[in-house]
Image 1 (cartoon, rainbow, N blue to C red):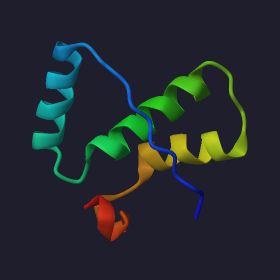
Image 2: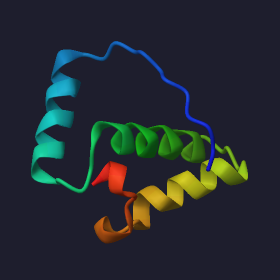
Image 3: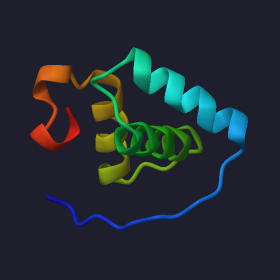
Amino acid sequence: MAPHVSVENQIPADLFQAMVVFIEQHPQWDQYRLMQSALAGFLFQQGCQAQPVVRHYLDGLFRKPESAPPCCK
């Protein structure tokens, strides 16, 4: 498993509120999975072809809730 790095960031309140609403409506997602998917999607769309980025991008698109690790359900 890849190592994890904690990141602290400030985001606009309205964007945060949209994230909270999304997570409430999609319990298989959490803030960590959402941010990982968003970052990987952005990097991929900007042309990053690094294998780990592509893998995270595709996992964010196709991972089913039942296949999520126990920590992320």
